[in-house]
Image 1 (cartoon, rainbow, N blue to C red):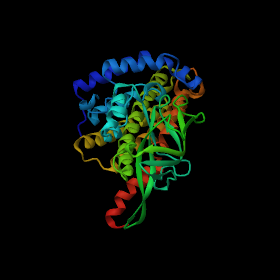
Image 2: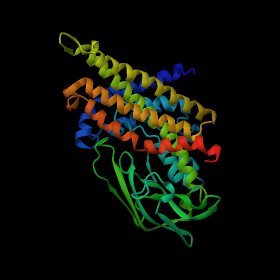
Image 3: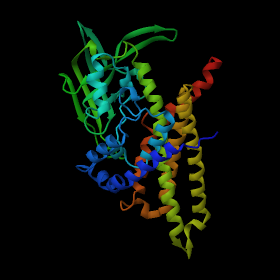
Length: 386
């Protein structure tokens, strides 16, 4: 497999890297300690992204987006993964689900997000359902020309408070060969809609400054014109977003692992014990070799999935394998890097301990490692009728 990048892609990565080293990395520790991005920093990042054409790179040029292909987006997400989500999230990538907007929805939701005037959140996860979409308890009941939404969503992550939510709710059920199946529908719900309350969630051990919210809906009435896509299309819409989202998480893991490897290698080459660099001891050098090898494998899996997405041939297990391997790879890389640094790795003076905490989350969000293994195993067993 040949995944050499083009000169244009190299220029994109180099431009982004230079900006991140100047405007993001210096603010990481302060952002983590405060649980929030310092005043003015997020605004500078967003302004730069808008000026340089990095804003909305994932949406088509026809609607004002950057129109990048999936392979280029994977490289972008890989570089962004080297810093915290709280900082790089200000380079906004509106969800591609907004491309399902029609009529008035385009001017009210899609266009403002492309211009950087509004931001959305993807409201799927629930306290009692987690990754099991079909167990969601949020309901939307028809009432005249409206739908009345009731239920709760949590762990809804976004940078800053969103202007509206893409809310998934059950609007009925359908009979299938496997039994009754909930009819999941997506709605566009503005934050000031009566009956909709948004509160910030608890502080997380990892990605501390990347806020997550709890969304509560109590008899929240929205017009049927707020439905995103046809009724019952919510499951397909959600899966489309989740599949590529898993590739982006995997790409970010690769970027973070590369930064960890660089720090670990420099430390091992310069830190001396017993009269020589600790990198000369196999206990250290073999850890570096393992990180480098697994990182190379993860990069290939990510680019393989992205190239298949560009060709329209990516299947769910491609994204699941990339996310599973890369997220577990970066966890091992972070743990090995911390071990190489020893006690200093636990100190806030250097970013290792923060990256160690942040990397733990990657095995949970966008589908846990167990969910990814389930998807992969199902792809093997279903053709055999099992």
